[in-house]
Image 1 (tube, rainbow, N blue to C red):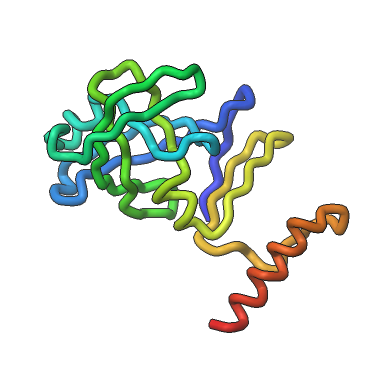
Image 2: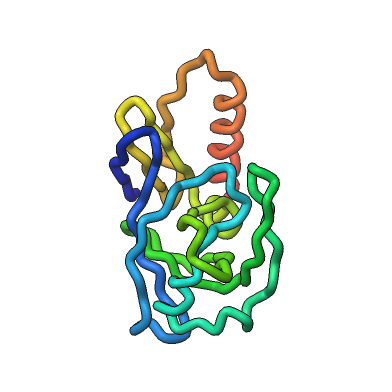
Length: 156
């Protein structure tokens, strides 16, 4: 488990981005934890720090909440976030006008559980969901998911 405090209702995490083909090239960044972002997004300067040729990535067009679009290139980047280390596809923009975002694809689906506690301003990542969970009975959908997790773990 890795937990990160944050301020002002904006969960920001400090993480290290590493070129998986040359681990001597890395950069420490602060990223917004964005549950609404389909993909992780980085400004152009990240590609320079990691020694990545932007044009060698898969070219994609990304749309935002405001209706605008931008061109970016998908590159696999090693992400170290507390005790978590994994390779994540990150869309790197053609310029530095975008913020660093930690999005869902390639990251959220590899994590066992994420907790976002806005009352205590804490964001935690778990490699596996800790069992047993303390879930109030008034949340039947969460109970159903919890029971399924327990069932799947027993089947392993």
